Image (cartoon, rainbow, N blue to C red; front, top):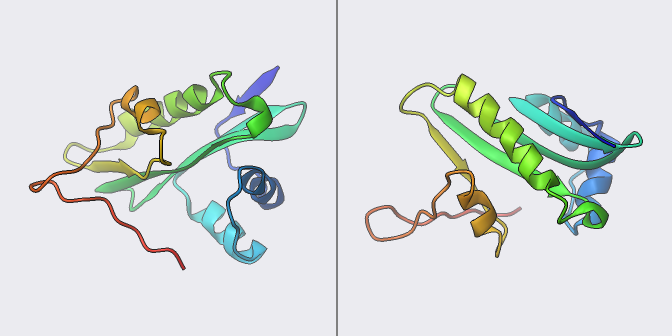
Length: 135
């Protein structure tokens, strides 16, 4: 049975989950700092093994960003990503003041998943384009 906890995973499990989907990780110290600096976490466990997670980062006032929505490849297509997003959306509904912005960067091809939760692509001349820089 999958257990959802609204708390951060430990850094080693988080790094392992990120590796399982092909993401790179910085040194463990920086992973721990990032975990501790997050505003909200959702972690999914199966038999005490981390199989999914997601979090909210930001300034806790005007800007909130959904980050690291991850489900282990062995457990994808079972609705676990939706469970993570439902928990995150509940947190955001209760904690975001009027006028705040909630953002995310979708992995390529996953845009439809986030649209189910009210997110829209932000493209066009008047809206600008999402951009990022990787170090």
